[in-house]
Amino acid sequence: MEDKLKKQYNGWKAAFWVLVIVLIGSLLTVVHLASAPVKTPAETTAPKASDTSLELVLNQKQVNALANSYIKKIQKKSKKPQYRFIVGNQYATVIGRAKFLGVNVQYAMNCIPVKTSEGNILLKAKGLAVGRLNLPIGFVMGYIKKNYQLPNWVYINQKKKTILLDLNKYTKNKAVHAQADEINLADGQFKFLITVPQDN
Image 1: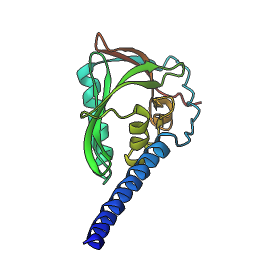
Image 2: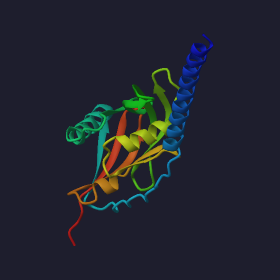
Image 3: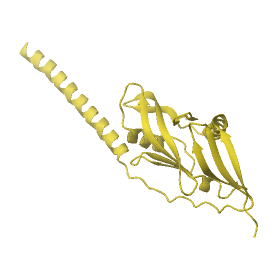
Image 4: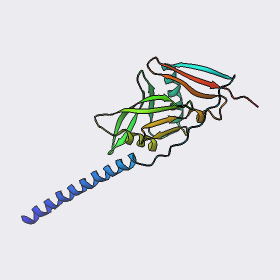
């Protein structure tokens, strides 16, 4: 009888330690992803405004249509997780799904877009909703960086909690260059400077 109790007790003891090891392993994975080193690239410099420059003013609906069209195009060829980008009255929001402890959870990360001195757009993460979980913003940004199909002109810095949209790099070898001139979420107005390169 005592042998049976010892075997049963040892089984529970082993299960307890397996659970502890799994939890510690999960915690270490989260810490590793959130604290991974971040390469911060230098922003691409903007071309100088010239006689061939014009101002393009877009409203909120046009910016969302443009962003969604581009995202659908790059995600069509990818088997990586899908995400959306929505510009609202207060925030620009990245919506997607992340895997946490083996469970797919939906998240929404609110960002404030700011125009940089080079005419690029810097998204500063301000809030995160992940179901009822309270996950650190840096962890989710690290997950996005590692698992999502992002263009080579989008840089995520999970330590600073920022996403850089390097418009100058994106339009560098295109027929026209685009750079942000003004971002006004409250009024839903977004101004861009479009420059056609001059042939010398």
